[in-house]
Length: 132
Image (cartoon, rainbow, N blue to C red; front, side, top):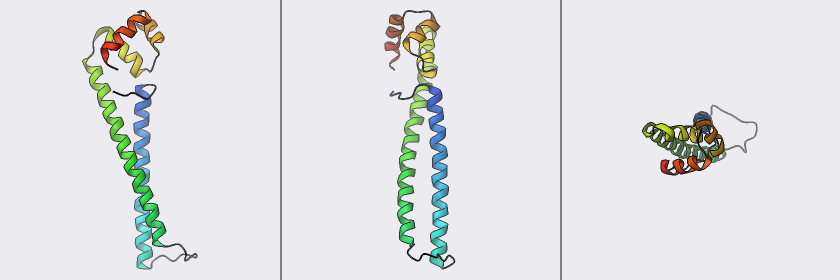
């Protein structure tokens, strides 16, 4: 597992932001397709004739690459979330508490030690057994 966010909540927020971006890119792509089709059919006339379908197609390629990157990132984050959920469901006792405070809440080892009434060294040792 490769946690790069401060907390589980941050991970959830990041997932929702990427979903919104994907939705926005897809709407933009649909709009560009409509503009291209209307221009090809002659239904649209622009004041500046330099605007061509090629420029719209270039924009479409850029949007497609953004969509691809965001879909890959979303898949990676969802797998990370599933891994966290799986680990959390298998833990019990102090290991569960440590995992919750460290990963879900995003606390430091010192803060976690205070919360679960253990020494920092004990938290470090237990954390190693969780395979973070």
